[in-house]
Length: 110
Image 1: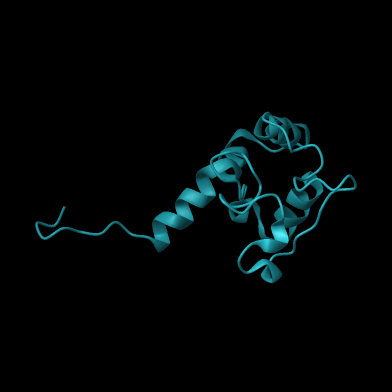
Image 2: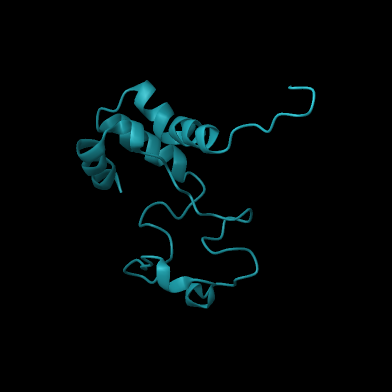
């Protein structure tokens, strides 16, 4: 995964990187109610789905509760600075979502 971040950073710049966790609220890498068979999910064919060598559905090394801490440590180890890591771990997503989902103004203008 870190190699992918490095590649994308070189290709388009760190301001276009973000973590897309795709996890539901129970930590399952499938939507709630979908069970553990990803191919049974709606629109399954549009995803570039893969499993790890052992059949796990999480990225090797990231299928555990400390995954974001481990990813952050990996980014630090690769020389990403604090500002870049803040962008990757949420800043870029917040910026883009704010731009495409502007706040709805009420009748009184607030």
